[in-house]
Image (cartoon, rainbow, N blue to C red; front, side):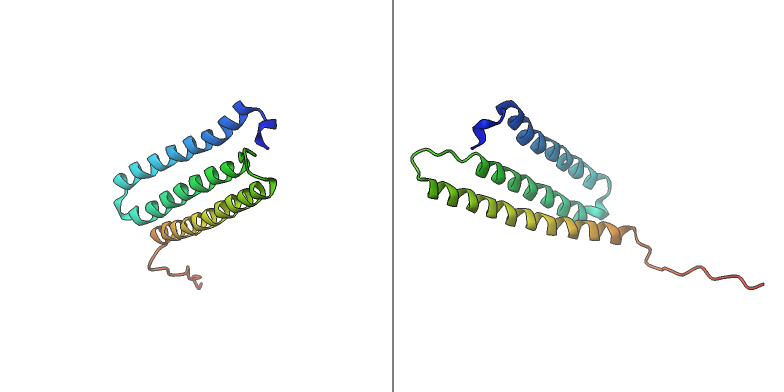
Length: 121
């Protein structure tokens, strides 16, 4: 299935994303040390990126299913299963992302909000 595409391109697509996400995870770990009060939000974002990497690799494993000794029906079921798992892991990662962004928003919102009053005069 995947053998029709350029293997070098596929290698860079698959592992390039993983490398970029790993760099962002490293950045977030260093950011925790600089801003410890936002640790919980950064941990949710790290969870999001980790689950996204797992979903991405599971998706590519589904695309790379080789016929081998299995029948076509088994391969189709295997690919559909891997795509389903990748989707569920991705969904869980997105929930982590939403929680992380919400926690960051709460850190930057003002607790004592007072609207600007019009001056009479």
